[in-house]
Image 1 (tube, rainbow, N blue to C red):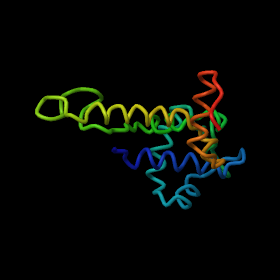
Image 2: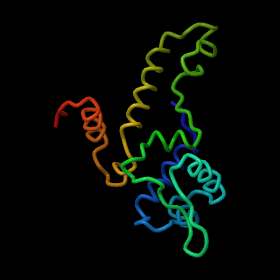
Image 3: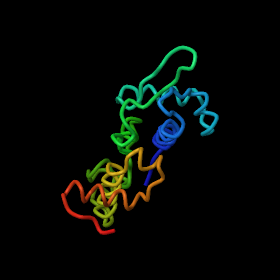
Image 4: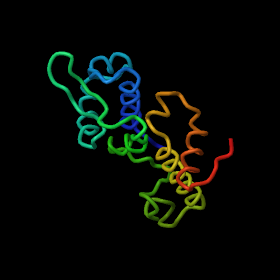
Length: 155
């Protein structure tokens, strides 16, 4: 599986805002210092996060970024996709055969492709609030899936 620093850093920065905002803007310099990420890199990421509607900016003294939506309305998949990050599990582009093995689908292609879809389903089911509140992510995911299907989860 391949995920670049873009997706990881976007997730780390959003969690930082979730943990440190309390409704007030969080500066990129504070995030950069706490997360050991270059402020210039964060500026690039936050322009993408802002365009995706995940954060809003506040200018002036005490300015920075706040969440544009409630933390329980922001799926971790939204953050990764906003950073233009593709979770790549196969050597191919999506389910395409090109790039696999000698122009044919490799023997493990369906396994890796299915795993990638499961990973995205998991990230869609976990919210920023789940991560900030340090909920059991496996349990949070199963509860969300059960609610979506209107069934009672196993506890």
